[in-house]
Amino acid sequence: MNKFFKTAAAAAVGLALSGAAMAQSALNEILDGGVLKVGTTGDWNPMSVRDPATNSYKGFDIDIMTELGKDLGVEVEFVPTDWKTLVNGVVAGQYHITGSASISPARMKVAGFSESYISVEISPFTTADKASQFSGHDSINQPGVKVATTLGTTFEKLVREWYPNADIKVVEAPARGYQEVLAGRADVFITSNIEGSTLATKFGVVAVEGAEARNPTPIAMLVPQADQVWINYVNNWVKVKEAKGFFDGIKAKWGL
Image (cartoon, rainbow, N blue to C red; front, side, top):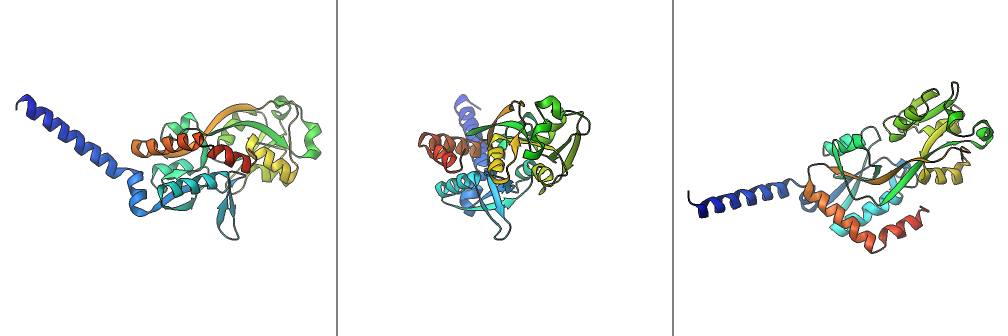
């Protein structure tokens, strides 16, 4: 085979592989099917909140995904999931993308992430009547202090790292750690500054005095790890929307 035919053959193989990658991309599936499937937990206020009476969702994430669907020209289908299965769902193809999730090395091993558009810090919270019992992280990391957290969340991992001496109570979704504290079955929970401000307004919880915020973490959407076509679309969409002030507007709407 001469040099010309070798080059032509290589080009043909490259085009075929490129075409195969495109055919397998979630982007093509979304455009062909007319539906963007979004995995969301519905339990992270104000990011994603599910109304059980109507089975509808609202929040920061919901506004983002609605806009993404609008720009794609497709309908958005919100697929219920929980934190312990959030990553598995996108890996298994149950949905094309997820709502906001913290970027972590463990998740990066099996899933891809979009460009980050917001970040969080984590702090411990308690109820006002117990606030005087705690001062700083060390006061929480004590035997007899009940720290509640939700199975499968990044909060669970952090609670175990920060407070190994405490009595750690793990609940399964849809239960949440803060609910255990509000019900008096636990003393402390940890959450992001985003959710913490919402819960403070709604339920009167307070940040533990003297316990500095920890673990600053970028937040992004989970996507299939090997689907570079879809990842490129989502990343560039985030950049365009940031440049046009869309994310700033949504943050202001939800008090972030």
